[in-house]
Image 1 (tube, rainbow, N blue to C red):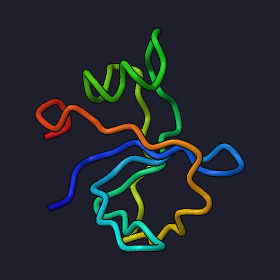
Image 2 (image 1 turned 60 degrees about the vertical axis):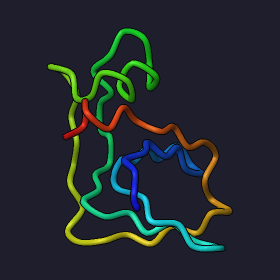
Image 3 (image 1 turned 135 degrees about the vertical axis):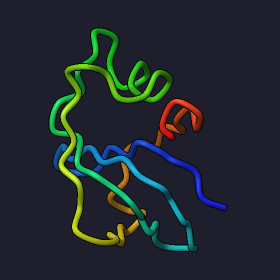
Image 4 (image 1 turned 90 degrees about the vertical axis):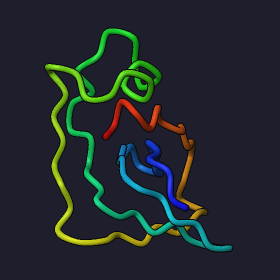
Length: 83
């Protein structure tokens, strides 16, 4: 089962989407780059409350495979807020 997570990646990329994990990789489905958080209390607020009025996302065109060695931080989102 996948869960929606925010991933902070090497070189400052921040992405969000449904994470399917294998041993070495995460497959991000229905994902987006987080262009603007749109929060006053950082990524924790975005993870907990979902998309805010000033949040800006750039959707991917398809699935993205991310090698786990490039993940700096993974934040599990409030699943209900991100539906």
